Image 1 (cartoon, rainbow, N blue to C red):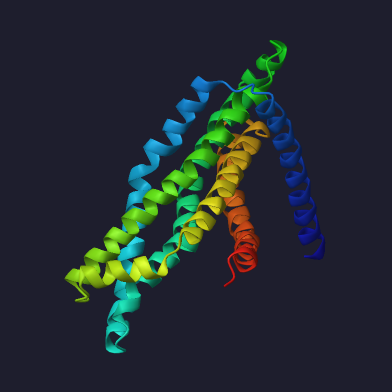
Image 2 (image 1 turned 90 degrees about the horizontal axis):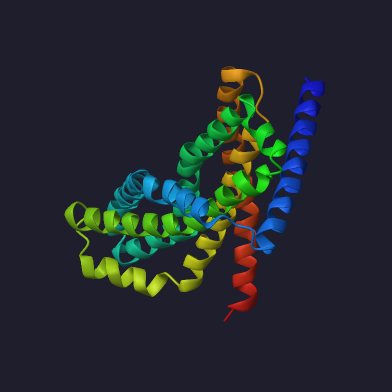
Length: 262
């Protein structure tokens, strides 16, 4: 058991190191402006537009469930004026960035791993090397940038849909007026709360793109290998998102306490 855990830890550290080196190579292309704009826009469309329905359902159900779970109890305690603010804060700081990232990791991370993995097992990536074309520049850079750019936008959309769903349930089921719900949000939610969540989403996007592409590049073993890479990409991306969320949350809180303390 000990040897198994040790081997797993070593394997994860090795993968993190290889992904870091790959990201550094990608940054060198980004800094020099060697970005294929057409590929970038195509990936942004695939990641952003095609994921809107999924994140809409995620945000809507989350906002509605939050109000259902706490609304009645808050009304009984005479604290209905806090419901909107609590829902908005929970969405902006944690739920919207995390749930959006997990949903996108399941859809986009797996797609990246499957697409690049198929190219790897059919020797298309080797052909790129033969043609003196960098797979990092051609495949990695547009996908990672697109994921990093689109995750914050999708998170904003999740926030908006979640608040809309929560306000609907508050009026129709919990008997909290729309004015009370809105004023609670305006008095509680601050711009820095939204910015903190979007900053986390940007990092989550980098993680999703990096893991999906890395697992695709490391694919071998034909169709079976593609399936394993796809599964591993989703699992690893979600694990890294959850781990990174803790450290990013601590960082955001410390920054807010340092620069916005009253």
